[in-house]
Length: 212
Image (cartoon, rainbow, N blue to C red; front, side, top):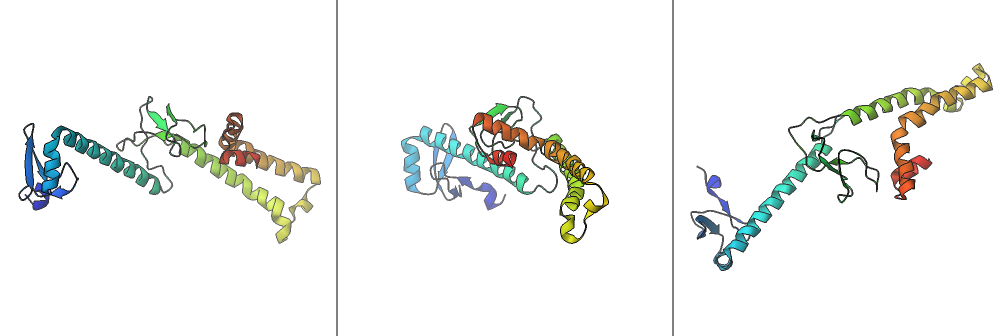
């Protein structure tokens, strides 16, 4: 066994110590090791409190590690949702910007409008990418409709005056037909959240998008 494998943690200060050379005390049949006489004296003065504090610090460290893994899954997303979503229908969801907001099941934050995310992430679950697929479909439909709309509206600036090939009425209705689904179908999730923000008076970025 290597020296690293035999090292342990001082329950008082949290430092890593070598049991072979460190000071030690026993409590409830378990040996505890210390980096200095000062830490050992503090432990011996109230061992139950020291053990409880060490257990709490270890739990907090594990929670921080869990949160770090969740953040990494966001940063590493490349066209797919790599963060694993809990499959339990009774899972608690929370807002990454407003952690005080919690509810059972997915939804959107009543304060900022962002999608709620699982409070507890199951890294072994591939999750449900339904929302991602829905937004992707809306995006590509918007692209297909917006490109010809852009050409019709801005074409005259680059010498492509397509309005000359049709009547003014047809030209106007064609632009209307292309723009309407982009605004009201592709942008529907954003508009819904914008209206909701005005109803609750929790104005946010979706309020601005809706007004625009």
